[in-house]
Length: 332
Image 1 (tube, rainbow, N blue to C red):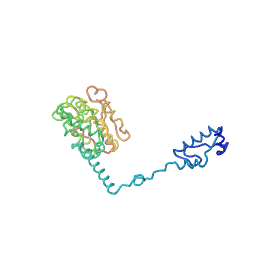
Image 2: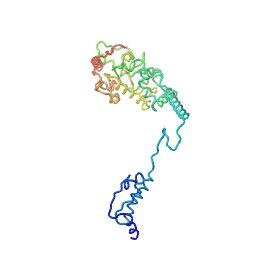
Image 3: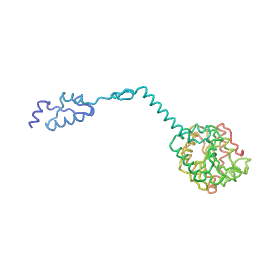
Image 4: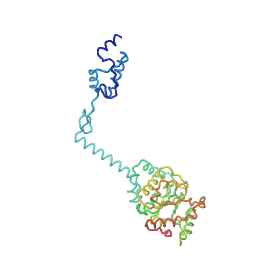
């Protein structure tokens, strides 16, 4: 009671002022506002009547507010600015680090990659997954047989400029037998006989395209030279072990290929055969491109819609409407 009577001499009675963060009596602010508020509440509780802090205390808290640090050339006012020599040294170190990173990235870019594809897909080579993928494939080749041979992994980039692609056929995994895979999906090197899926493709062509006859081999290089991209989702495989290189990074790289084509070209025809290819092509802009879907030509599924799909003649119809040169499917 005696303490409350003494405070009554200094603080006006029956005046209630709400103390807000950032302002105490219009002066105290910042991190000291809670301290001032707490002090005012304590006085009120002890004195049993609302109080406001006197001007003397508000000025005190205002002076305790920390000042903003000014910066000069990125340094606080309390530290010395960098000398021209230090700035130049930092610039040279940064430049050297960037050159070192570029050299390390370049060492992982396959020499066999076609020039136009290399330039268009440059952003992929600096991503962490790509050096890891290249290292994995190189280690695999030391331990076991890997198909296709190194110089044929990127055949699909060597036969056609990326800007000249007109048709995209998506496959899944390279053939894993000797002398089969050579960097084009569904295609095999001569004189290896065509695998069952390719035989079924030829059967559909014979019905769909007038004048088509079995070429007597399974090499589809003639299509690739005309702008038909024959792209597997995974580009390498262990001998006799299907899907042995899946989920190692190839899928991300070939997704980037499909994405680039989807976003930078117009009027492409995508042939998506089977659930796997259809899932990989699910992001294709169907207002910008033509998408043909059916079952996979494998003997297990060919009768579920592949036979009779007429994708090859439909492709030429789309290309004709787009003003593009038709594919000569017989040119094998």
